[in-house]
Length: 350
Image (cartoon, rainbow, N blue to C red; front, side, top):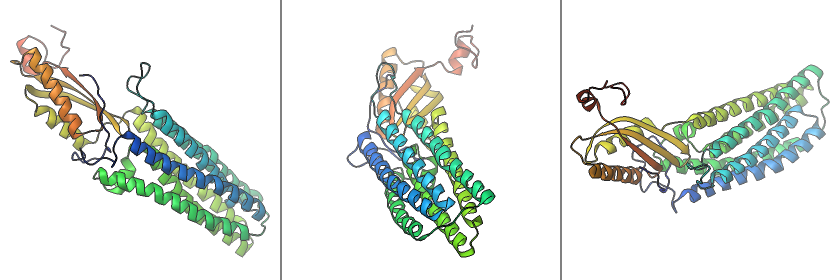
């Protein structure tokens, strides 16, 4: 069967995530527009915060503040890469890419995780080690505290925007928020939520290091805070990188959804059994389903063709995220034996 377009839905674990659970206003443009707004909010907040942190870090002489500045710069670069991901993945299928560009989102999101590691984690760890080994000259921390307070409010607003979108997606997919955050195929919003969460923790660490250094006069507290910020960014980069690599390599639809697809195919007239079922997530709101199907031996060619049409319609109605359905009529084990073929061997071997 050829592929055809359908309106998307979130890819939750529940097989009931079907018509009526998609984004109000419907269509991939609605979800993509919401994700774009979330990323833009995060980018705007991080850009302003990065400049303020850098100035405060220079004035106060705090390595933790400079690490936080590098953290915000890395986050800004990350958001720009995520915006690129959203724009590139929006291109419709063409002759060069017949399955579309949805996977481009994961390529750019993977580069964003690399930017987090290189631009934030490496600098923070280096600066922390340098401070512990060489020391630092502490200046007036007043500006740093003011910047940390303002940054906390801005990062909190950005996190609130991302969590609100993710909570709505989890609700539509009928999946707990924590589980959805871990397994969501929308890695752009996942990146915003994780990076903003890490930013808030980083701000607390920077404030703690700055306070400890000025109360004791020892730069050790500041250096340790910088190291902890770097390790935090390493963790975030690793989690985001792993998620995107997994989706690039090819992640199937959740097991309950695959079982429901299997049942839908068996419910179609003329279908005797489903020999093999393959599903693939191609993007946050796009999936493919392919199956080797053993049709009843008494079915005519026309009946098999219409059975394929009915199967595709049933799947796309229940699971709007499935954009393409491919069914391969394949002889079952009984027919292979009758024809003198190895039931588990190649169909062409006599």
